[in-house]
Length: 364
Image (cartoon, rainbow, N blue to C red; front, side, top):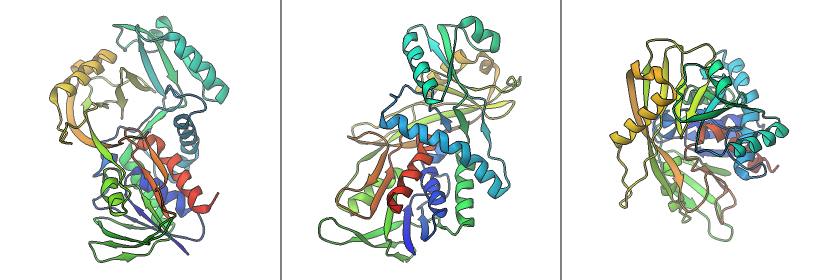
């Protein structure tokens, strides 16, 4: 059996564990220093902006999104069938409200490209937009772009389902298990040798997969190939409305603010983007959250009468000096793989990342 040790049990690590559990001949072990949902996965809205993103057709960013969107079409029913459960999500699409300052021809060009790729976008001028959704805000809006191919899925239940299905298929999951030391061979290229944990466990994996988000820097530093991953803080609030959302109401986005319906009466609104200071510290700024809330009310005015029932903030991993995410072999190592630094797109890109890691291990 080929042993694979995955470090990191967020949505990315969970997706990798599940994808590898479907490959014969692998012994898969996942370790996480915390409990489920304590890291970046707990600071995500789960908005899957793929087709509606302004990514060029041949770019790496689009190819990852395309592969993830296609895998989600099979992954969700696959998990629901294996676990006999329902994964909470919003399949009503994503609606982007465009301001008057936006370049409408840019969206027209994108719609043509996406149609050719099999991901149609609908462009709506004001009359059609407000005929369909009269509840939306009107100030400064010139039109809207609607993607029925994009969606939202709740990150924590998704992660729980991925790990539960992986465990059913033989994956060993170890929570509150921190990696304390990694031995490596000399030579060129090097190999990860023995991996030790604070619980006393020792592994000699054939493959080490680092999907540790903000823990990546410390782990790669032990391997003398430090990858800088910095925290970016995000805040969001959960509202309960006095009147229900219309039937099949999509995620509404505009100006990088999202209104994410969770049920008939509840939604998430978020999220801020707050970078660390010169000392590397980042703290939640109440004013930025207030600005997000004001922008959300402009998108969906009924929020003005809604009640805030929950508020959270969390850190997302952003690689420094390179594009996000970081997927592939660690420099000068033949058996260490990186699947980290997804920044704000961990849930969106988890399936494509898992497929990439599977293919590297399988030699595809």
